[in-house]
Image 1 (cartoon, rainbow, N blue to C red):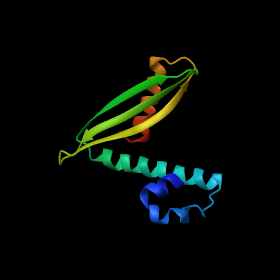
Image 2: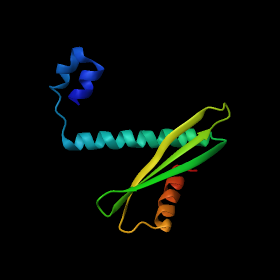
Image 3: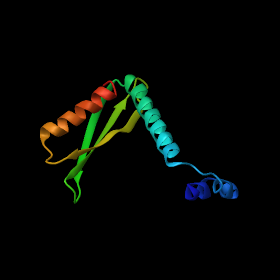
Image 4: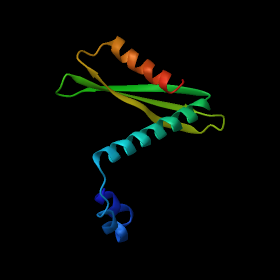
Length: 112
């Protein structure tokens, strides 16, 4: 947090050093930010005339694959909007069916 404060407002960065946040406060705030982002994506997606999905899967050293689903669409004003719709972990063997199920969850969650 101090690094961000130094970048954003270096003249008042020392004030941020006095703020103590519990782990639960940080987790709650991150969850609120995530919910806000999802709400924004849903609102933008309602106005899409057309959209496309892209997905990227990567597997690290563990047996857990990371699946990233992003959406790109345009509205009636021809504004192009691109957002990361979801990122999820797929444990064990990654199959086409598993990827499809995760993409389908993303579509349902974002009302697409």
